[in-house]
Amino acid sequence: ATPTALMVGTGRGAQLGILIKGPEVLETTRTVDTIVLDKTGTVTTGRMALTAVHTVDGVSEAEALRLAGALEHASEHPIAAAIAAAAAERVGELPGVEGFENIPGHGVQGVVDGHAVVAGREALLADWAQHLPPVLAEAKAAAEAAGRTAVAVGWDGAARAVLVVADTVKPTSAEAIRELRALGLRPVLLTGDNRTVAEAVAAEVGIEPADVIAEVLPEDKVETVRRLQAEGRSVAMVGDGVNDAAALAQADLGLAMGTGTDAAIEAGDLTLVRGDLRSAADAIRLSRRTLATIK
Ligand code: ADP
Ligand code: MG
Image (cartoon, rainbow, N blue to C red):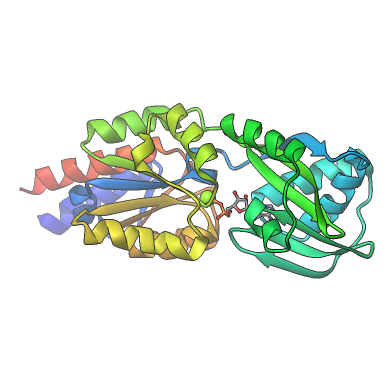
């Protein structure tokens, strides 16, 4: 009877848009008490749009967009896609890049039109002794307080622009988090983005600042899951990115967004086909109900 009930549960999951790797996954689903949520692409749509360009005196928006856009064109990050698309739209064809380098969780660098260009976190530019002048530091702070991501851009040895990209919280995320709490789970927001942005998003969806883990490098997401497990928690992790794959595999239960990368889907135990976080609550309810039937 047990395997049959689990098979039925698995079939019911498919109807709910939840693909379950094996019937045994439902057992683990029942026991989780903490749910770690990746921010970009999981709680938010991950479809970023460029909303503002700030430059220092003497630098035009077009110049900043041309150099940053050319560089980001070579990257697959959602932030990069937004910048490259806006740049192509506003300044036309973008120049090529030489010596392109992607620094995961930090940004990108390369040579465009003979200029050594770097774009990404403030700390990445600081590695090149490029510090944001007050006008750019203020623009960055204001953008982040509003939950937006500020990308610092430097070339020829100095920070010269800040590009603001905005992502939007999925309309279903706040409700999903309420449902997860009602099921007794503690939601935790995990992101590589900075703390101010992460807390603004957390406030929007109802996650406590104490449960926000920000500025986590891609390779350290898995460590965060391990640490929570070491504290005695049974951890579910929901993610969509290549960055999330190791953490999804480490979690007691890995839930991949069906709208995400193949790496995440392969690493997960469950796939939420519609990319809707409410399906995570559906999955937990389903497993509890299925296992109650067996008892
Ligand atoms: P998340 O965990 O939210 O998916 P990532 O770990 O991919 O974020 O990136 C962390 C941060 O590094 C981003 O918020 C951004 O500030 C910076 N970053 C990463 N890649 C890029 C890029 N291609 N261009 C600009 N900034 C980037
Ligand atoms: Mg993500």
